[in-house]
Length: 293
Ligand SMILES: *[C@@H]1O[C@H](CO)[C@@H](O)[C@H](O)[C@H]1NC(C)=O
Ligand SMILES: *[C@@H]1O[C@H](CO)[C@@H](O)[C@H](O)[C@H]1NC(C)=O
Ligand SMILES: *[C@@H]1O[C@H](CO)[C@@H](O)[C@H](O)[C@H]1NC(C)=O
Image (cartoon, rainbow, N blue to C red; front, side):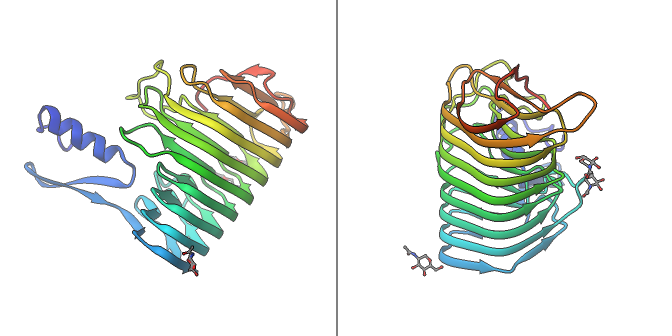
């Protein structure tokens, strides 16, 4: 709204830039606007580093943003914000290689950990998440020239009282992209609305090209040893792109229960067929998955 006076291309560019959740357009006067990054803490361009015991409380937008880092370990991180605070992602990691997030307690109003484009060889371990929106790869495919996400391991985490558990989200109508070799394992869910979620029709605002398939290619994605309780009936929801089919998405040893008047938990799928091993509660793909909450 602030930049209504800007015409054509500039307006588009400004809009595109401020869509990134960690940015805000600040206008001092009608013709004097700038884009401010708003995070409580940003770690940029670090190599071979350790960050231990940092706490962030009540950020305006992202709490911590780890960007362009290489071989960086974050340990014993604390994040605290109310569940109703918008876009307060806990720890965002993007365009970084070899980041280890080992030990964090995250209570916030958006994703506890979000994993952006250009992330390679990431380990997320011993994270306690909730309230919040869970641990997410993405969103991906919103902007041109996004770099691949390759090699993400999320393990030994407790996700409690959140709207999602572990998920991958990509925008419809996206440019081509890649997300591969992603594993979520040994995760406990406690009262999580959708514990396991792939959403390649992710569309939180009205402006996305709904109906145009995502071109982000998902491959070699594993959800393994995931147990606990689902707050809604659809405990496992897997929606892949109809235009760029996902390949080798696997579910292994899943035990997610739901107690509610609508009956026991179900698994729903669209445009995909997962590889199944071990225990499977709920049974996979007994329903057709629909986008949205
Ligand atoms: C990674 O960083 C650590 C310091 O946290 C350092 O000890 C180690 O040698 C680095 N590894 C490489 C391959 O550079
Ligand atoms: C779960 O979250 C809701 C709202 O986000 C909150 O009101 C409730 O107290 C939380 N329950 C627990 C056990 O943390
Ligand atoms: C479960 O989560 C929902 C919202 O996410 C919340 O309203 C409810 O109080 C929670 N239940 C328990 C037992 O924590």
